[in-house]
Length: 83
Image (cartoon, rainbow, N blue to C red; front, side):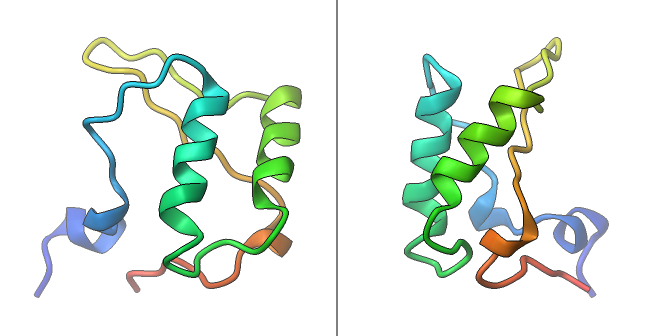
């Protein structure tokens, strides 16, 4: 049985070693990771940029900054589901 972390996260989609100067750089790198794996639909990058401009999801944390950028479910090509 998987431990709790494996049930919540897909390890291949957790990126600890990225150094990005701007949110836009993060979004572009995410597209580079998610699109080839079939997780996002065309238009995701523009949609996530628009959504993040309206309401950013980034959080400044003591150890590292984190974010969970997302957009309308219509841009999900396949869900990342562990359940």
